[in-house]
Length: 272
Image (cartoon, rainbow, N blue to C red; front, top):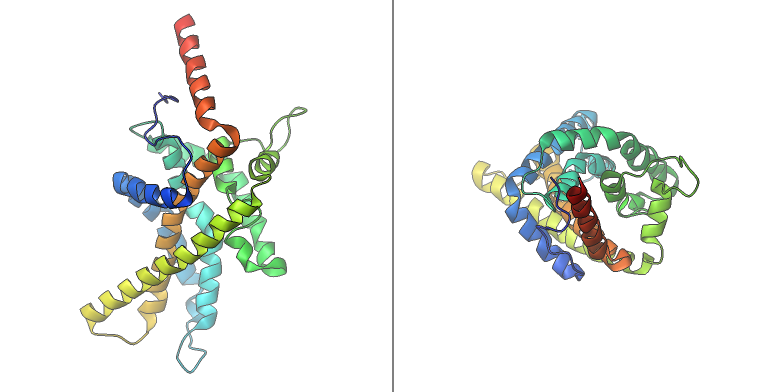
């Protein structure tokens, strides 16, 4: 049973540096389940991308770099990232209150939230690439869209007057926070670029030492490049979830809400 007044992560306001540090601690504590969910979500997407882009590997510059392949791979990964990492977000939401997380519950929640995830995170974002700008994939209008859909599960349509829908909830949560959220996005972009470069150079160095091949060739583009992208996105999925918690604490006093809900649940159990 979920205990709303027993947290496995301290519920308090944090700076973004603290959020990044906490993400590393969460990764260390939950390494096995997070790795498993990451593999289950990412590997099918990575195989699909490799198949889809196999005809774009021809070099296009004097340096023999397939720029079109690299660009399309980046766009595909950014489009697929919310769906590929949805199970990680659901796991983190459950692990905040429980020692053991049911895989069946995560699967049921994935199925339940898939229609909204696909509509908001895929169907609405593809036109942004074509008609607006690809950088919307990195930030977008609502950076915590996945957390709201996956964890709060508001209905898409208003069933009664005044009811909280997904779009209305997104507006309420993000209202008045554009400055701070943009600042965190810029820091995340800079750190994400450094983390991606670190992963890429690590893979390249390992490949060179193991196979004595230091020239950029097929595996550098087809394996190392997407692997570095996905690993970077995986880490910042945890960071985004923790930032979402921090935003709710700052805006809504979420820790007080949890205590009141836990006390209400305790009183109901005593009455029955």
